[in-house]
Image (cartoon, rainbow, N blue to C red; front, side):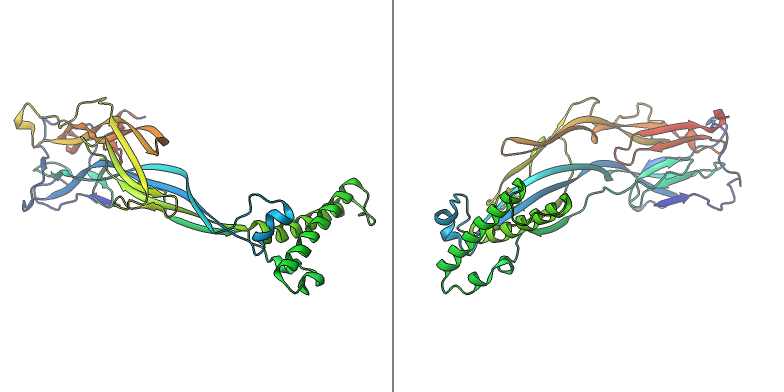
Length: 366
């Protein structure tokens, strides 16, 4: 963050700090003018923000792999859902929208000082967005979204559970028959334990639980040889989107059930749309000063307009909400009394929308 304290050591400045309510008629004024490249003047350039979005799309890929004995799954175990070939499927889990402020290069201004004014304390973000006047402001936290990628697999080493007879089998068919017979034996043993009919019953409930868990593990491992196993990958992509007037619905990206999120021009995926509909809660366009003598003597801030925001895929709404959008509204202004040397009016601005977040007059606070 840039905490800029305008302490210009000039012969015409009084060494007093800002305090008291500003009275513009008693002191020479501080100018706030539209910044023009090449203008040399003492001051600081600040931006008003435009509202942008960090959009996190999280999806999971599931890949099912066939087991070694998949050809015998239906015949020996009556499995109709066994995988016979590798199958991959991506599916969207969730979408998150996090608004943030970025400098609006069409709204850049320069705060300058004139004779007999006191230097105000201004706080800027690292990229120059105005956060406060006559006070310090906390640094805005960056959007808490990041790209991630995690993988998991339920594959077990099935051959660790082969008995000696299975290992000695001379063909794949024989191994499959013996493995299927072992699965049926495991199921029968589990049934006897739960009914209390086993030859060797456990001494207590905890031991029974452990024995049942072990049988479940053995059956799952051996069943994978027939039914197959799956591995998954959960991935989050982060996109940046800046709403614009006149562009209500736009193609954000594409999503493929085989590749996940892909670029807009990759036709292997179906369109993922974003709609930002201006509700026109305020007028658009900058508020112009009727008194042109004041044009260089004001501080601009934003009044955002509300908008309905929706992201959709295949005619399904993934996320929907309402948000204030800076560039859909208009600018207003504060007089430069804030910069007079007795000013005690503290102003905080929203770093995402640029509107006034809080005003406090320290002279009235007891």
